[in-house]
Length: 323
Image 1: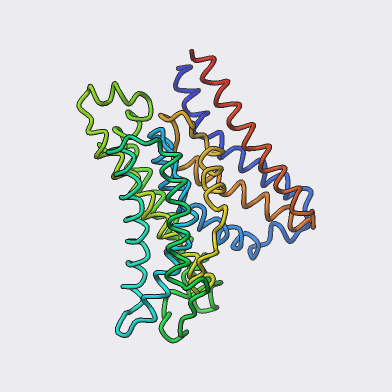
Image 2: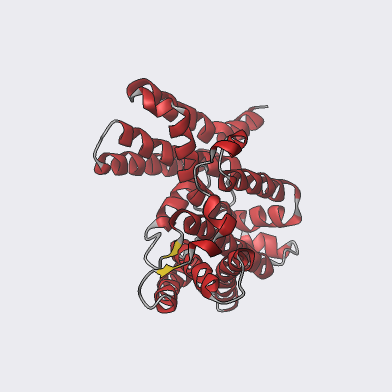
């Protein structure tokens, strides 16, 4: 019974933390913080980090890391814009192209990590620079503008809902985040891929001896992480409506922070989709609350950094007690 209680506490802890942070700002911030307009803005601002963090959750649970997600987001926006400039290319093809570009980068990273046995930190650090450079090369080191007439539904994914669509409450991009989070939570809990991901993160050698195809699972995980980063790039493109090779610099830190604040262990073997989404919302709520109170940006950074350190420290303390 005690073990089950601790398991539920670890899972729901980030959600309780989200309610605490929101309640704190609701009490000390102006009334505009709790308005429906601000809540919608919080949801929209969380979507990009949240979608990218879904893939990062798998990577961190497996004991890895991916520092290239910010660059993949930038590459995705550039690829989408470049494809839209081509004659006969529609928005769906362009969107799929941006996601495919991200998945391809993940495939390369996963292959190098598994075949050459290079640590994920070094591989993805190098890929972060390579992909950012590729994005700048495709865009000739400048933004790629797109004819507004070719955007169609792409420009509405992250936009404030018009009056006739208010019944949706939130933009389509936010609902996509909710849908993908449910799917990935089910994958982690009920599928072989999910079980193998936890097994690799807990003890890779033991997982290999038990018959887990470690290399194949890792490649799939990094491909999924790249695909989700590409999808986050699609959301970023929807916000900007241009391909920008300089966008999302440092986004990988926000994504990793969301997963860590959500209760995932950097040592691998622990983490949840619910916790990751809660972690992403915690950072956005802090940013929104500080903005509503007109606090300087450095205050927000200090608070977020302190929360990350506390989350990692608690994880280490929990593992020390378990040992």
